[in-house]
Amino acid sequence: MLTVKKVLNNNVVIAEHPNYDEVVLIGKGIGFGKKNGDEIAGEHAEKFFVLKNDEEQRQYMNLLQYVDESFIGVMNESVEMIENRFSTKLHEHIHVGLTDHLYFAIKRIQKGHGISNPFCKETELAYPQEYAVARELTEWLNEQLDVLIPEGEIGFITLHIHSALTNRDLAEVNKHTQLISQLVELIEDSLKIKVDRQDMDYLRLVRHLHHTIERIQSKTYMEKQDNLQKVLQSEYPVCYSLSWQLMKVMQQQLQTPIPDAEAVYLTLHLQRLAKSNE
Image 1: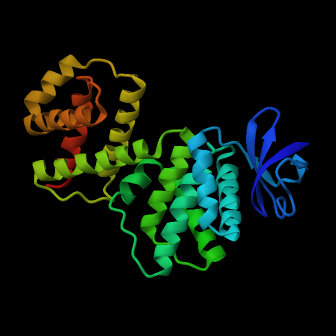
Image 2 (image 1 turned 180 degrees about the vertical axis):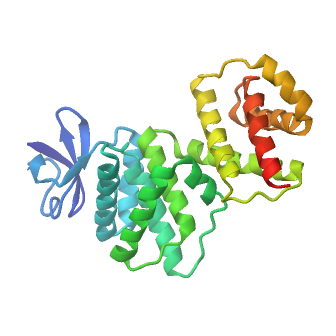
């Protein structure tokens, strides 16, 4: 038996748990007629999750003041669907972040306001599995809520899913996606080309850039390629110079050194891209 600490609404209760301190219990009618201090059987909850962070607890309680119970129910089913697709538990902050984000996004859609996401393609390339689940979730939400969620919103949902899967801060995940877009713009300006976002060489470049960021942050650097570096500098001076410009931008944004070997791999990708756009 658990002890009710706070009834948030008829279907959501904060309770004291012997192992997890405070937990959020979710179940149809689980909070009806309950008062603080009442005992409650945890098995009656359809789901429970732990918000260990005090700020997330405060945000979730605040969120329940303006989000109706039916929407909370839909969002809890959404989180369960995502967990089933990946066969893993998501970090609990998704209950706050994704619920808050989608509530206001759907309100804007219902009022006829558009949703713009210039980084949608880069997001899909970076996180294809998360994007596929986000698309499936969007189709399900369209039926449940009688709305038509636009393509751009799938990209935002993808970032929330990836953040919850990896327990990385959403702002950091979003920042990396924007960094990739910034690098692509620099490539287009420098090489005087307009990159086809469906081109295979572009897809390879974007995936490489994302892997590079992940390697740099985990400090798993590639081996030095000094001999090849000299050859590429001589053979492809424009792309080689551009690779160093890209690395400088990455270093400034990520606040960490970029290994010299990265110039080799970037130069090869850039040369392929430039050749396919001749």
